[in-house]
Length: 333
Ligand code: ATP
Image (tube, rainbow, N blue to C red):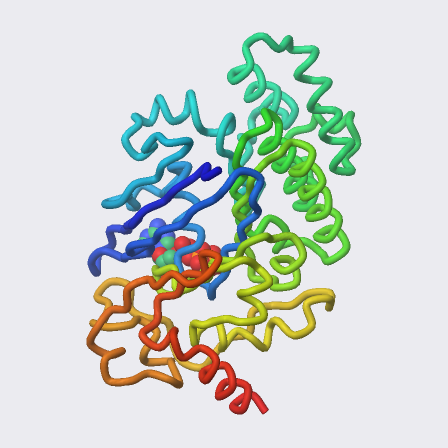
């Protein structure tokens, strides 16, 4: 069943130079228990999409168009108060890129988690909430006595784990994880990711996992969505997207896929520069970097095309995928 249905999301940031169209017509669905990997190079709009869902955009950012339906209700219509009371943490939570910023420095980490539990589950006693927090700490490999420490007493890795505890404390239906382990060393990364996955299974939580690490995506995600220049250019089940991508941008990332069992597989960068999001050119945003661009790619914006099993692609040449894949493979060698 579809839990989250984003349609034509447009999120812009006001700047001195004009509006940055960071999400410019993004449509995305997430089903119950699904783990969706959101990938794409830096600045493509991944964090913007996540923050739009849970309304954590900075002051100059605004959702200017589109709908975000959660469980059938357009949550862009809710007041901030309603969203905080009914949706944030309880239904949808977020693990931000830098966990330290997610905690208030003047309260202990445990008190902040207990507070979230008590606000959303008023029937839970303080003692029960503290116990649950301790249990979550143990699950995440943290000393339970640490719940009485302040954020500054935590290392980056510990804060990140504590943030996972907070994000899962009231068993939300959806967790938005924004590169939850990027700043950490590889051993801790692995452990945190495994724990997130286990807890997610246990709690039946769906997840949007933003990452640069393709080995993570292929290991934990059911579906992969690729963003480029504020647009969602391709989406398919993980296996299809890795084995049979149709979009030339995803094909360009292919070097990142072959050995997904390797420890860490960063997205490779492809030649060229990302598009201007203040004043985007006509046509396909990827055209200037696309080895397969034709005349129409420079003038007509491609519409999303849906193939078997919900494989969605925004490319004029998506029908020629097999040819493009063969050509891309030749270019690689
Ligand atoms: P990363 O992987 O580096 O986190 P991302 O794909 O998550 O990147 P976003 O952080 O969503 O990308 O940024 C999308 C675009 O919006 C970028 O061009 C970025 O420079 C711009 N942007 C983000 N936040 C702001 C802001 N507060 N004001 C102006 N522009 C912004």
